[in-house]
Length: 88
Image (tube, rainbow, N blue to C red):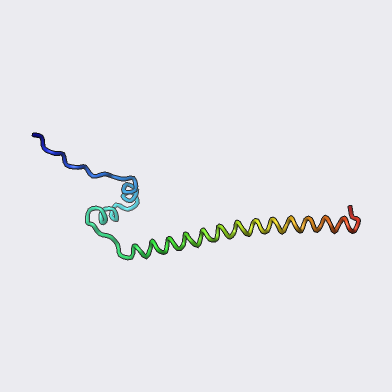
């Protein structure tokens, strides 16, 4: 009867990226099992920042469309004014 093989650890691309970025932080997390405190707070701030940014992006799109609509209305009014005063 053969001996069962030990499972090899799976190395993920994100883990390689973490190692390349900071070997010591990788070692602390993967080998020493250290997880920094306050991680949930950092994620919450990041989520809030992304939500605010998304709101600004949507708002700027609406403002751009409104500006184009107002420009078109102004252009039409200018043409009508010029026609009524016989400038064309």
